Image (cartoon, rainbow, N blue to C red; front, side, top):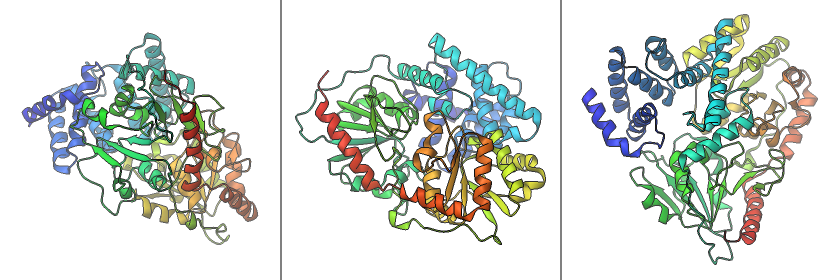
Amino acid sequence: MLLLLFLLLLLFLPSLSPFPSPLHNHITSLLNIHKLNPNVANTENLIKALNESAKCGNELDAYGLTCLLVDSERWDESKEVMDMYLEEPKELPEEALTFMRYKVASATCDWAASPSNREKYYTLIEKIKKHLENAVETQTDPQIQPFDVLRIPTISEALTEKVSTLRSKIINPDPSPPPKKSSNKIPTIGYISHDLEKPGHPMPFLIRSIFDHHTLPVSIYSIDPPSTSLSPSDPAYPITTHPNYTSFPSSLPLPSILPNITCDILIDLSSLTSTKVSTLLSLRPSPIQISYLGYPSPLKNPWTDYQITDPFILPPSPTHISIPSGYYVNSHPSYSIPRRSPPPKNRTFTFTNLGRPNKYTPETFDTWLSILRRCPNSELHLLSTSSLSLLNLKVLAGPLSSRLKFLPLLPQLPHLLRLSSSSVHLDTSPYNSHTLTVDALWRGGVVVGVKGDTWCGKVTESLGGGEGLIANDLKEYEDVAVRLYEDGEFFERERERVLEKWVTAEDWVKELEEQLVRIWNEYEDQ
């Protein structure tokens, strides 16, 4: 079995990320094998082989096993492997283990198990922060993806921006210049992503209807699609039937893809979440290239000319395409928005947050428990992603644990139907819900949040919040949630105000196209 594993590693080595680290190359290769062969038998065989190797003291394979389990969101097993084989490593670099420990601890809510675990959680964050600062100062690869940095509490947007700039230099230190502007009076538009055919991924669900509303010529490019095709019942399936949809398999090298990207303006839906897509854009297939949706933070790299944002998220800038009604698009049917009142006083009032637990912070969860104490006839519905997170949160909740209801992960449409039982969505901070906020608003709920100072901390306020629902701090956040529980008139007034701000995909595309035509007309060859 181990011989087979090594042969597979050699087979996939050419497709590795450009990171120089042997550790990262080893892990990336393992994950590539898993993603290219996602069936259960192959995954389980690979896990079994790595586990046997880890038992023999191979720390590299123990770490690879952890990464594979994390990539599969098998959090309980990843925690067990780290505790068993990597408690006191002798060979692995500290920064790699620190970040993986943080990732597993946040996903399993390990900080909730005891006061000492909470202290360890923040110690891990401080170590990561120092590691990132050192990487930026020395211009060395931190081996932590910028998107992962966005989710770490207390790390500033300024440091995140420096990490993303460094990552861009690593991807391609010598990017190509833009091609010559075409003679087209009306620009052709392209959308590119590596997530378009991933079952259950929120991004294709959000954008699936915008292509029907474009008046400009549109092409869609899917990079590295999964080996299994989307089912026709998947909400994102209609994207793949678009007449100008092209799918490039993972076996296809970049030089073969590049000539097939033929558009004047290319909208990158992956940004720094895909090395392959970013590398492709660094070769400049289009005169104008725009980042949108995949990476909610300021970007500065030579191949991103603009970011789509809104006046609230980022201040005006020549490199911002600012959508007046809000940058976050949705494809939820506009006719289905229910207008409903809060539940009667004799019925249980439901607070929800169905985001993954790795977005929770200890302070936010403490506030949720305070809300439950002040609202006796209420429950808090949370997403169950691991038995450890469920157990740890119940330990911290103590007597209130009976009012925590843990719900399974569901496909998109059943998930939306389930939200109809929710009255108030309690948002996370400093990393807001994105798609979940849209879902909650569409189902007629009210969303309560805290003012943020980063892009990903302003999303909820941009989408539908306002003075009544977005608090200045967690104490005010708690008070707003309690008022919604106690004051039915306040609930109805705020819900109606939010519904008035709802923007359909058709309206959003119209605003975007006005901006795209403007920048095309203003563009001059460099």
